[in-house]
Amino acid sequence: MSNEQQSAKMWSGRFREPLDPEFEAWQRSILFDFQLLPQETRASKAHGSALCAAGVLNEAETRAIREGLDAVSARYAGASVEAALRDYPSAEDIHHLVELALTSEIGPLALKLHTGRSRNEQIATDLRLFVREEITRVQAALLEWAEALLSRASEAGEAVMPSYTHMQRAEPVLVAHWLHGYAEMLLRDATRLEDCRRRLNRCPLGSGAVAGATLALDREIAARELGFDAPTANSMDATSDRDFALEYAQALTSVALHASRFAEEMALFSSAEYGFVELPERYSTGSSAMPQKKNPDLVELVRGRVGRIFGAASALTLTIKGQPLAYNKDMQETQEPCFALSGTSRMIGLLAGFTREASFRLERMREAAATGYLNAMAAATYLVSKGVAFRVAHEKIGHAVRFALDRGVELNELSLEELRQFGPEFDADFFDAVELMATVDCHDVVGGTARRRVQAALAAAAAEVERLRMANTTTEMSDACA
Image (cartoon, rainbow, N blue to C red; front, side, top):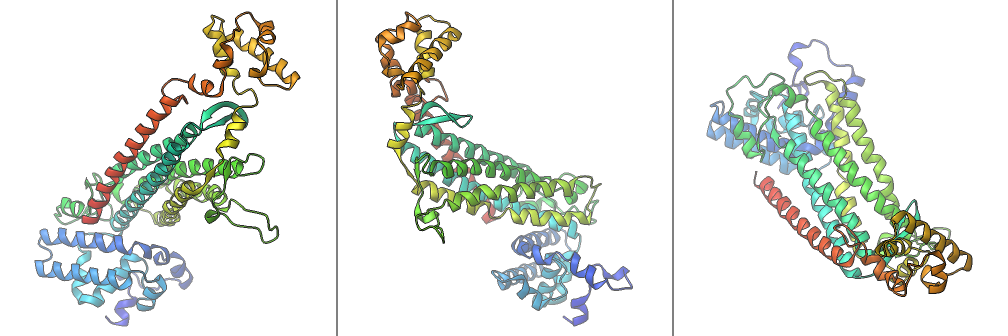
């Protein structure tokens, strides 16, 4: 390929003057969209298949193009964009780079590949493929973390800890119940991503620049080859749609918020003031000044990562907002937010490792659950079982708590005679009713912390993890075969 051909723009025929050099450098997307090389070459091969079926390419040409694209992909696999630009310094974007590289591989035949397509549909396809692959990775990481949480919940058995409302101790719960709560959040996140993937899994190839391809392409061919469920239904929507990227970013915002809540509790519970968690050394760091410190750097970074993820969702929202149909150059700004999210699966994988290795100080948790009148709700429930209206029972127990506070003892340390000053309903069986495990087991409803309910919930969650894993594995295999 001559230097003149290399420097020519994909659209330069209509123009007489070159671009302003500053504008040309500023508007190029190759510096960030180079990472779409695998998606671009796959989509180009699929378009070649559609062109062959339409009679634009013969089988030999199609085979040469596919082999050339494979060679381009192999040449730059693991390479930096700087290396690629040393070969093709004029490349504007990933589409231009691949066309230049393919021309170097197979000659002028490469130029036939752009027949019947536009960069507008190319980038829409590439981004869908990229987001789809990222969803698969994040789902796998979420399920790994959920499995770690459920495993630790099973290990905790009947261990008890305080629950909190308003950052104050509330009622005793099983440690397993607490950990299962986070697993449920992650399972919802995984299904949100599952839904997002289902909606984005339509193929834009064949949409042209705006109105559809000018050739009679069988759009099912490319869609099938790339593992999409079907072609997109409207060319204007397909080439300018980025709501799949926004939905993905919003789903990851939910993931990040849940991860941040867990991170916050790990940072709090590992402090000396709580003492519930011993940080795993493999996921902690020390202080350069204070020799005794073990800092929760992993969970602090997770807590901070919410800003980046939420920022990406906000950037996508504001970029898409107010754009008329169809493609506008603003759409180029939707790529980098998607790329900024690509570290989420790694973050979740690290949290899975942290969860497996953290030490829960179960005796300290139990001590905290057994003090501070956390059995007051169970005490009120006891009076209700004796026929006392709940509002009245609530007040009676409130007076009893006040009395115990003044004496510096727990409810169950009051004598029966002392309790009966608050009502004749108190009897000797009161003490069994407010014993620690009884206060746990009185929450015997679906979703409650009673031991038998938690065991059933853990089994159901484990089954859902397995269902989602099987679905995700099937999807991953389907994508790999496409």
